[in-house]
Length: 83
Image: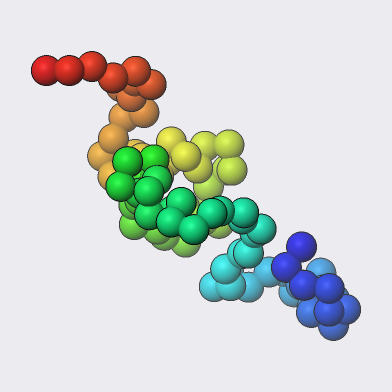
């Protein structure tokens, strides 16, 4: 839940959420954890869009984000190798 303020919750219930408002989630990361994960390619960053956030089914959002960057997720491999 983003807020416990009753007037805001009523407005969201009556008018729907503001598509330009971001969502907040709890995240428990240690100091430097995000930087370490970014450096080890633990995250995939791509340009966002309203379609990706609001017009895409949550179950297909991951694949849609990769597809928007020209990546076919069927070709991804959880393993790794050496060349």
